[in-house]
Length: 169
Image 1 (tube, rainbow, N blue to C red):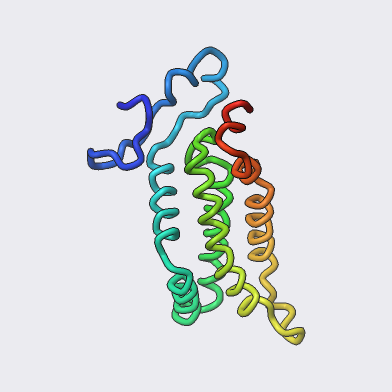
Image 2: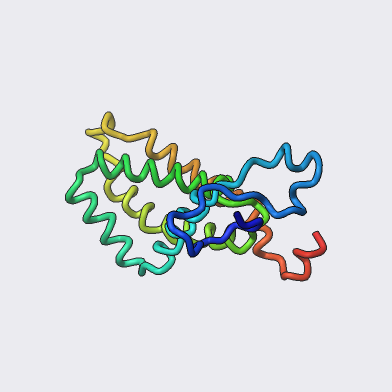
């Protein structure tokens, strides 16, 4: 097993678990640091790559088609799962906080994806005042929690610094 996880290993199936590099394993740091799950990180990177390579119009069409075919309830369930996955990625459950490039990529992709999602939410999940009882407050709560987690992330502050400043901090 490699000391440093590989995003796309040559072996099949993907490596299930890998260890942190040796400099992170010294003394008490090892006990506080959880075991790294490569499969979760690789799945997150594949998800981020798919969204990054898709044009905005395709993403909008995907959500519109999903809403048309599956209906509001199933689309709301999909969006709720998306918000939970996004929060998981932001909270660094998929890869370590020290992987700056992947973290910054994740933030950019999630910001890119939130524009079509927010349009979908505004156009289809805000009911008329006559149908106020059909308002999906949990979906909106998940959406705002994910958006606030994304916008209040430390990684967005790091992105503003030049590489020289990052090394000194």
